[in-house]
Amino acid sequence: MKESLKSMMIVMMPYMKILMWVGIALVAIGILLIIIKFALKKNMQSGINWSMRIGFGFAAFYIICQFIGLYLQMTPAINFADSKNFEFNLVEFWIIGAAFLVTAIVMKLLGRSKQDGMA
Image (cartoon, rainbow, N blue to C red; front, top):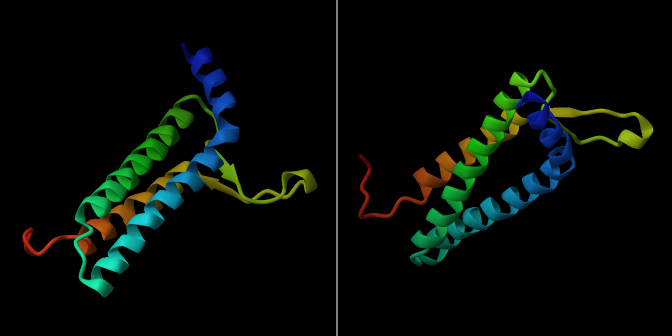
């Protein structure tokens, strides 16, 4: 079981950075919808909720991947430097998950409709 999880994680690692950028793009759409909501007084609640849930989903995904990687005694991280020149700037998955989590919480607070109240 552990070996199959390790091989799965090794296969998935090159795609984690791409997946992170997709998540950032989808959350950025939600942030733009919040700005439009405040600037134009338009009702963008469904789009904001959609993007907020995606942010929470990505946060949960990266945090769970961090714990699974630690269980497998691997280093779950994304390299943001040029590995061809042997430069390494590793960012662990829990940091990426925490960034998605904080962004989703801020979107939840700012994207709240007037009917929700400030409870």
